[in-house]
Length: 163
Image (tube, rainbow, N blue to C red; front, side, top):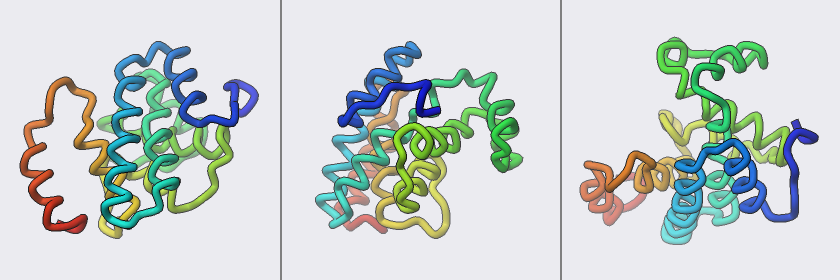
């Protein structure tokens, strides 16, 4: 996959270029907002800012693939597919984002790949980095306007990351 997509020394530029090339304007606008929010949350909660930035920049890169081809692509890549992902293939964009992060950008840090993988659904053993990327994504959602839960989420964050 490395040869398919260009790379520079600037991850944000690379991600922006690929999203633009695939016509993913909504994601292209969403990613910088998530990245900014992830950096802010990382600073606030003493999480590795560079790891949060990397995960946030790459969290939705799997969205370059069409929803109707995600399931077949994951099967071709022999990725494990959960029943929920079979029913809602859009969830597979997170696994595809991990593949692209690793194969295209050479990201191998397990904690960053895990944060990318669980940015949509989170998981029971979530690290602080997982939580930062998940929360940044939810606060800067890409559905237009402010999410209906935004006020409650911001209030909870006043009590700490675990709240």
